[in-house]
Image (cartoon, rainbow, N blue to C red; front, side):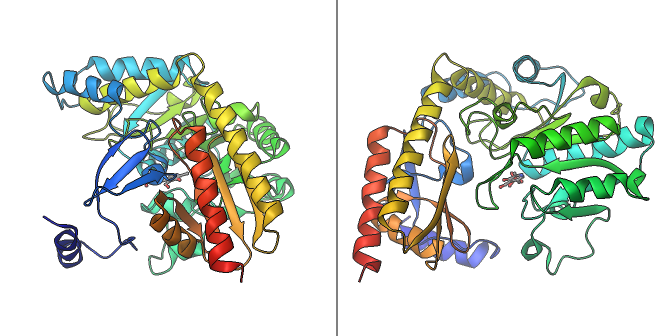
Length: 404
Ligand SMILES: Cc1ncc(COP(=O)(O)O)c(C=O)c1O
């Protein structure tokens, strides 16, 4: 089937929920994707921050092939080795004691919200309300959508799940006011992305996260970090919270964990996790052996000696290059920012989507996250030479298309 047929069928039979680029992808290798005609695109998006080990990764493919011939699915009424092994790896390498597996980022956020609520009901005796951040993104299901602090995602779907109060990202005084106010006992948790991904790569201040940690601990409230996008090596540390020296009580993971297969995980400290009992929460597909085997291989790869150091180095390299770009094009670029291999270029007046389309023509895939913010989340295996090529292309675009 050629690209035109694929587009035609998609338009005819798939619900119209995505604004797609005019590009049909066929296969991938390393950090490159290829279209129908064999044209190469270097990936600075990784799906939506998913393909952290690029495409056709040997370790993931081999784990999948091995498991494929053994067992694809078994229900959680039984024990399976790949699930147990991955849970051990996640706990031994993080703040957490226990894991719940599901199938997506939104589903992991739902699990975190439910766990925080039932902990309050059973143990802290606080209310059900949760403090969330403006400009945040937590997913499209009703709980996650209600936690999301951007109106554009809410419009038309009201009424949302009640009980979320949004404060400005970084505004500790507002959080304190809510928790210490007359109705402070109504709040059981705070949910925050340590780095807001969809919001435009906004990095939380260390003091803010420390302030949230202290306040929630003092009041027997749960601190939830949503690391669906920035966990698992993306920021140059295994988990984003490690950059800030602040541990959450619950953390959500998803996107890159299973090398491109659907997965989600809720990690928690024991004191919180014990609020869940059999029957409280479940997922038919969560923790299935095939997906878990890919996730185990992914986790082993990113925890290999030197891997995260490499992410940090390349992240610093991108950041230095983007800073040069900002100096060279002060009239176009308002800001550049990043941590590890998640970065953003914020333009004064160019639409990020227009720049993304021009970059596709140059052979690069990126993500437009806000009207004027272009996000870069390349595979963590991106090479310096590929970063150089990307920077050359963006310089070319800014010079030829706009510098008139
Ligand atoms: C921080 C964060 N949480 C949750 C989600 C939702 O994940 P999913 O699309 O897998 O449901 C996303 C997706 O972009 C995200 O960035």
